[in-house]
Image 1 (cartoon, rainbow over the protein chains, first blue to last red):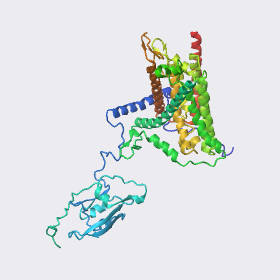
Image 2 (spheres, rainbow over the protein chains, first blue to last red; image 1 turned 90 degrees about the vertical axis):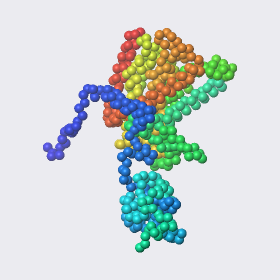
Image 3 (cartoon, helix red, strand yellow; image 1 turned 30 degrees about the vertical axis):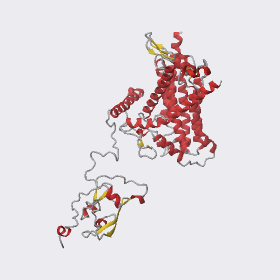
Image 4 (cartoon, one colour; image 1 turned 90 degrees about the horizontal axis):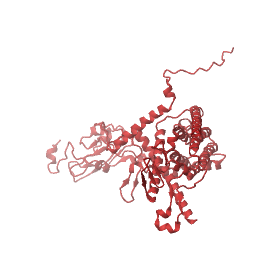
Length: 196
Length: 378
């Protein structure tokens, strides 16, 4: 007798071996039961659609927001506006400095007609293909100029070059001017700002 | 003569547009019905934008079929390096064409008398009448089996000519499965042929407008309930859809016998499958569900079992019959989709065991009982 003689094949017994009675073995009855279950779900959902309720658990994104959508979600950025519509941003570059992913690019420019904050961003762009949505830019901002809203509309893009968000879009996709640090009117600027 | 030509061109146009329409609509119905059965919404993002406006027509995702067609037309038409490119190229058409041809013998309406329907054409047509059916043949049911059997050749050709092991396995499975279930389809219908005494599908429908046991409509499903169940199961197996989709079996064989087909050639296989759903439904309607007639309805109007009758005008009868046929076909299509999204797939040995050890004896018993009962009644 060889040590390697073939053993008789024995079918492995599983711990959850199905135990089928004659009812299950007849197959047809269980099929009919299954068809009843699925058609019941179908009919119930169709009735729900007809009486105006949604017969599905799916949330239409982005038209619908889930009820448990996180209130503190850090979504797409905005730049807040001054009352006259110009950006609140003073191009101090603190957000760009603190940004761990280095996605914010600011080109500062000089505006001689605004003696209080002569610096303003001529270009303010964020590369969303690299942004990590940490919110450090919002915390670093001394002027309450950059914020992150809860929503994240239209972020997906076909290639990474088109994922740059420009200053115009940051200012305009959801305009806000309720800044915590109001821009002083031009006349009383020195008094209200104080002097160093 | 020229009148016949006009009428038959209209019939053929109607049949092809019905089949193509069903093939297109069923892709949508399948998606949506499966979604609703599974508490989902289903495909609803494709839209048609009206040119020069921002009005987007979504229509519950009805345009996803068009998007699919466009995608298949625009995809790369990839060819494998096969030694038999002719068989490879011709295989989708060998699957697709017989499926369409089966519909030639299926009656989709009763007798049409054009002179009565359109009085202005009465001079031209005279008293001519046409059964609403492309080809009224005495051997109608045999034609159904002849063309139905040809799709096996297409599947085998596709698998053989693809020079791919998975395709070959799928083709072998398709061949054995379809031949097994073809036999059962034939045996189940033999009982029906014994009852009606004819192979002509139109005559079968006219047999079914009567009454049996005093009140039941004399439908085939009343005479032969077992045969109806077995026929539907065998027909779904013949169409190679879940729970019998072993030839495709994407978890084992990628896509079975049409693995190597891309773009519109693959689309033809899929389209043939969807049209075959409609064909099976049309056959089941014709053979078992009274065809184009409502219960108690004949070409003259309704004749209820209590003796009362409703006489209908010819135009009303024609429109009712066309609509009733379409509605019945659609309900059976929907039932097939319900089955497809309810049952899990068989194992391969189970498919063949189911055919030869379960359905074949039942079909034989059904045939024997039918023959004995008919002999005893004579």
